[in-house]
View (cartoon, helix red, strand yellow):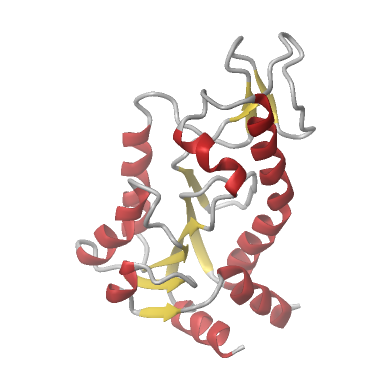
Length: 214
């Protein structure tokens, strides 16, 4: 695919940080706004959807790591995917998603094996996709520093509804001089300042790259 080759060529000699902003599952949209106000059924639907998408997201992340000099991934949208590669920084602005937790008794549990209800009190377990109070500022600061220390920032998807992480491409490009590549089917504003724009779904682009390497 021509777009995939252009992207690899543009990023091949650069240290890269990726901004992961794929679409948030519908089942999780309301939970992100008010995670403690949702019903048991909504919580389980969100956690189950993220579990299904985990393999897809991990395949995309591994394709990035295999084909690019990837130094970091900044997650703006929730995912259970784990890259687990040395020398690759993972920053999750919505909080760690390696666990689920009970909002009543406070116990946390690993997502593998996935449990729907707390074994202590029977309430539905909530994906840990929200930061602890007072933690967001530190996460954003670290994310900005990581992005600006790279040669290029690769934006995957649409970050514009995901504040405050949506500001990272603007700050990195306008104040840090970082080269910006955007892969998104949406007409996002950051395309106006990008050095390379690919108007397609990131999953389609990196699927073709992985096939070429195999």
